[in-house]
Image (tube, rainbow, N blue to C red; front, side, top):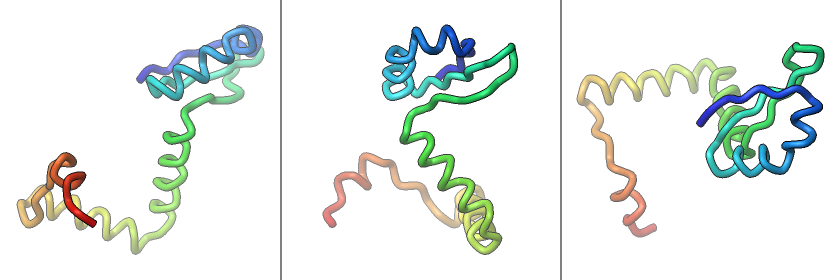
Length: 91
């Protein structure tokens, strides 16, 4: 994952390449106008995650719950389950 900066003019010529890289490599692209950041191009999945994070941060109760879970993991009260094992569980 890398962040690359292009002018709007260069971004216009590289648009398809940027969309592909954002979707595959999760690269981010900052587009500038007159040398100032104007817009960002990122994968839709990353965008959705950003919105979800912002939503969690705006809910004090949910934020406390997330922080408590992190503390439980850090202190050993809760154990992490590898993704491979979660994926294999039947629903």
